[in-house]
Length: 233
Image 1 (cartoon, helix red, strand yellow):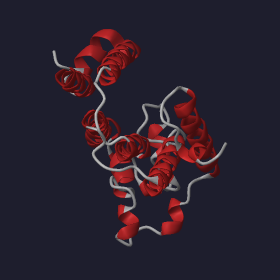
Image 2 (cartoon, helix red, strand yellow; image 1 turned 90 degrees about the horizontal axis):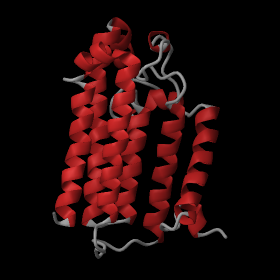
Image 3 (cartoon, helix red, strand yellow; image 1 turned 90 degrees about the vertical axis):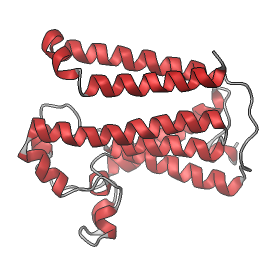
Image 4 (tube, one colour; image 1 turned 30 degrees about the vertical axis):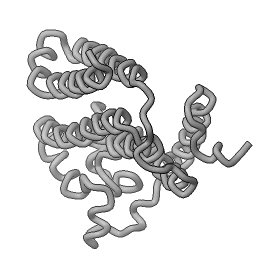
């Protein structure tokens, strides 16, 4: 199989297995294996298929960039990754979308910080991270890989809305009514004050630390030097 065909095939497998296990196959497998057993199977399949995607991506021959990547684009990309990191860290605490016992209680809280930006900060963090990679690695292979991650993150979020509404009922529907899927949609529409979107201290500090470590590791592991490390040191 040609490298590009292999990359596309593994990306389809990665997305397809996620969607199948998250929706049509979930209830049946969880009934047979138990919730814990299902989560183990889901994790194994997710990791295995993602490794296949990464290996296929690494096997792609060198490609010429589709546009020039200069310092202004790197600065924009670095800011996008920082924002994505803040969204991700902020999503780890008090997130009704996570499969936690206290999800219904968390949904009763007033949306603040990253949850006032979007009710799916983790998934939007992944999507923005993938988009940022396209900006500074403008090749066909990278676009396919990033598009796969963006598609899975956003389609997965939409599917999560439906699943949570079914599992949590009114608690999730009330949370959804007070939050937005698209970042800052409620602020742009004048429904929610912009001040509510200021990240909580743990999200801001944790996001900055994650951003610094991740961009440093990017260069340390032999990939392109990223973030502020392009201009520091």
